[in-house]
Image 1 (tube, rainbow, N blue to C red):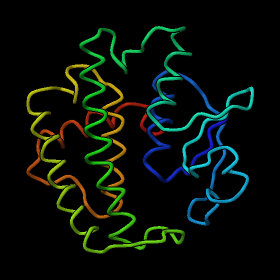
Image 2 (tube, rainbow, N blue to C red):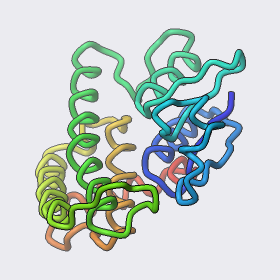
Image 3 (cartoon, helix red, strand yellow):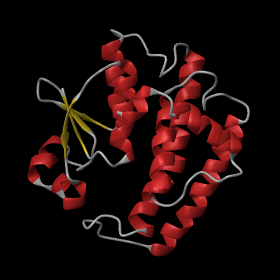
Amino acid sequence: MKLFEFEAFANPRRVRVFAAELGIELEREQVDVLAGEHLQFEHLQRNPYGAVPTLELDDGRTISESAVICRYLADLNAEGQHSDLLGNTTTERALIDMWDRRVEHGLLGAVASFFHHGTEGLATDKYRNSDWGQHNKETIAAEMHRLDQQLQEHKYLAGETFSIADITALCAVDFAALLGMPIADDHVALQGWYASVNTRDSVRA
């Protein structure tokens, strides 16, 4: 298998960290999104949406969408059994899915929108709305506050076990910091969680 990615972006990192947690080593090839390689014919043949990451299987078929790639890797790793990262009971899986989607569509979505609309973004961006970019700065702050509230009651986002939701949150928080929006000083629980998850070897994948 080969992972086509752009290393600096949050979504490819989600897959790398998840794979590292499972002990899976992936062959990786960089797609230079800043240079527009994701919109060139070669990559569009792999993924008509021009997105990264995209996982190419040994038979040539491809899988995209970060959470889907992670589930595929977990099923391969556990021979059909769910990894702890995804939950081992119906309730665990539901709670983890809920928080992963909340972070992906909330914090990570807002950070991505700010990147495209509140900064220079990508040269290939065809539309930029600076007001929308600034609005997403407020959304980022609000979403981090929600995470801080959850982490005041739980060790990890979906409970007491590290999961894919924490991986998504870590990648979103780091991308926000890269864009000048680190965790606020008064979000003590979020700061503590961040320090804890950063002790894991996988986060350096």
